[in-house]
Image (tube, rainbow, N blue to C red; front, side):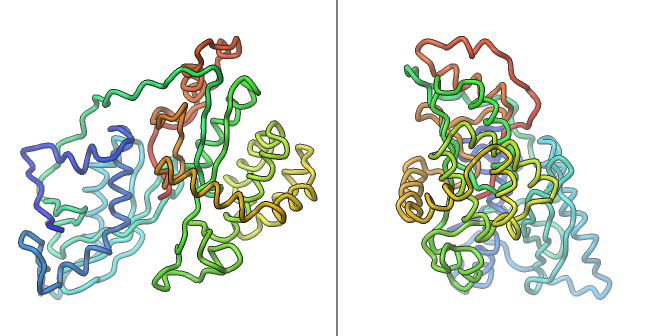
Length: 364
C-alpha cells in the first residue's frame, strides 16, 4: 500500500466520496478510516516501506506541548470534516506512539453525546495526519461537494420491503430503529419491515478482547461490537419479531428511551429487557424458549443475509434490495418504503414526524 500526500489543489475523492453512502455521510467514512489508522502505523517503521510514506519527525524540543498538538488536530478535524455535518470532536487523551508520532484519542460528539472514540495519528510537528493518505494539516482541505450523487431508484413491488441491519446498542442503529418503528406501526402488514442484526466472527482475534465478554458462549463465531449483552439482546429481538412483530415494535419504542437515558446498558440488559417486554405484553418465557430452540440457526441465517448485502455497519437499511442513504426520520423512511409500492396503500398519505437525524454515522 502506498500513501500519497493530498493534492490540495484537487478534491480528495477517496476521502470525501468513497463508499456508497453519498456526500452526506462522507465525514463518517473518514471516521471509519481513522479506526484503522493503527494498522498502518507499523508501515512507518518498516525498512521495506514503499516510497511516498511519511517519515517520523523528531521534534527534539523539551518544551514540546502535547496538548497544543491535540487541540490543533481536533480543530483540523472539526473545520474540515465534522462541523459541516453537525458533529464535532474533542480531545480525549494524548500519547506518544513512537518517535515523532503521536496518537490523539478523539471523542466524536453527535447531538451532544459521545458516539465514538477514535485514535488519530499525527506527526509531532503538527503538519501531517494519517487518514489512509498523508493529509497536509497546514493547508485547509476543499469542502465536500453539496451535490449528492444520484440515488438508485427503488424498484416497485406489490409489497414494499425494508430491511434494517443494526446492532442493538449502536447509537446510530438505535437512532434508525427509533425512526423505523413508527413506519412499521403505520403500515402494518401492508409492507414488510424487518429488523436484522449484525455480528462478527473472530472479533477477539489477536487477543484484542476476551471472547467471553463479547461472543456467544465465549466462542468466536457470533460476537457483538458492544459486548455479550448486545449479542443476547440481538437474539431476544430476533425472537420477539418472530413471535409477535407488532408487539416487537412496541418493545423497541419502550426500550430505546431507556437505553438513551442510561437506565439500560449492556451490563444490565439481560434483566432489564423483561420490564419493557412485559410492558408491551410480550411473554418473557416464550422469548427465552424460542432462543433456546433457534439461536444457532437464526444467527447463521442473519450473518449470511448481512453478508449478501455487505451490511457490516449499523445501520444499513435496504429497501426493495437497494441501499437507502436518506434521512433517518420516520417520514423519510416512510417515503422510501412507500415509493417502493407498485400501488401505494392509503396509509402512505399519512405524514409522520420529520424529526430525527441526517444520514451520518454508523458502527462498523
